[in-house]
Length: 377
Image 1: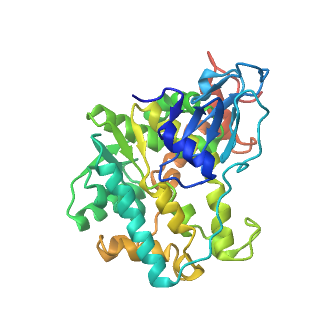
Image 2: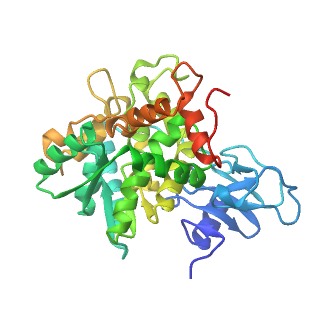
């Protein structure tokens, strides 16, 4: 039976990971309570919250969803402490490893094997899975290895719908298109904000496409939504890891990639809670322990440079995908789907003008309130 106080892994696996201080015990993340201790894996792949406004006595308040608590605070990733103890520092029990990089061919072989291990583990369970598909290399590789149905979401003139159509054609796959209307955003914003406990514009813009495609996938009878989350952070998908500009502290590409990996514990709860709110289980094969471990051993030249990002990942993907798909870049989902554009338009129509500080966030907050609010206040 599933332990209701622990998610993502069985208690025996977590106990062994605790004893060995092993950050990668072969899971896709875990969090909860085991033997009187609160735990959360090193990447924070399973959300866990504690009530920052409660006394941490014999029965401290904690939950997997922020809505269950008065003052929810994320429990630090990589930590394990007595449930009634003070909040620890991130990575206080399971630090993110910093292994020596492998040589080119060995690194690629390890990455390919890890991705197959992760996707095989998903294929072996009995869930009915669909893929959130943008036409980029990340979701395309997930779709190919899981052989699961493809769903794309966006406004009719969006980049993502066109990219998904051409990629699906190149892969010889059918595609379900979820066309959005502005009313879909107005309806979904409060649901996403409540589920995630976040109202800032960027988080809402990222979460909305996941929620709206998830709604359709759930309505079509599926149990889980597979995503390509984590690939950009793990494999060097961001321009800033090449430029090494003010946005990163590191002086090498590998160092900058590690910084991006460390950003995942704050990002992933948003995505997990959003997919949960749509009535589905989230599936993120690239966040499996084996894949993360292999990614950490990629050398600089298989991560990114001025000519190509995610080079090693693309080489693995090219063994399964048409070259035109394996080589594709993608737009961030909030822009590729045009959700950010349309949410901005709705905010301005409601009186929240761009001259106002963070006008879209103010609009999101207004949709959560009972009755109408005055945006000029």
